[in-house]
Length: 259
Image (tube, rainbow, N blue to C red; front, side, top):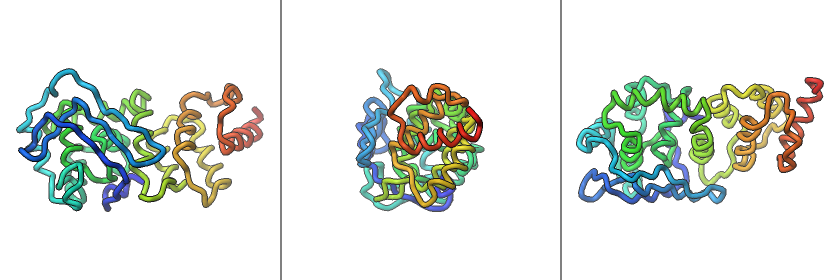
């Protein structure tokens, strides 16, 4: 799960295409006017990050210096996000300075989603620069100050759909299109901490789906179950499109609780 981002670089099959206006150098510039993520995951769709009608309110020099404090050369050098990035010990140093534990705090996922980072535990140059520009921060103090907002927006549901969908793609280990159940359960604990049925569902899944993995469709339907169906499952039958796995869980849960 997220702990991998602390100790290894896990490449995710995602091609980031960025049109730029915010310059890092003559050969690498970056902007947020028309940022669009173009994932190669066949189940994903292009995702616009943010549309702005004005230039980002940041100090370009200060933002460049913030990035360079943590950056180092990375492979592959021809990565569309830039030849360098923040990874490994520097990645951990960044989050230490942000006072966020990247292994247990959903704010780390929210920041990665805001940057549209294509790899777990790595911020490439364009990703980090454009993400910070979109958040309108250009120094570590301001970025640290954004962490509570990023965290609260996920927990409150404001940014949950976007961060939740992003997490599935970045958590995959290419070329696999499935997320191991054990990993999925750990991400659900981060992303859906207030879902009353989360522990019941995870316990049931560990027993009845042992050895199976989660595909994108099921991942997204679990979000729908968690956010649109009350704990008593009173309106579950109103949607006939639930996958069989969730039908089985609801039947089991109702029998256990006498609903």
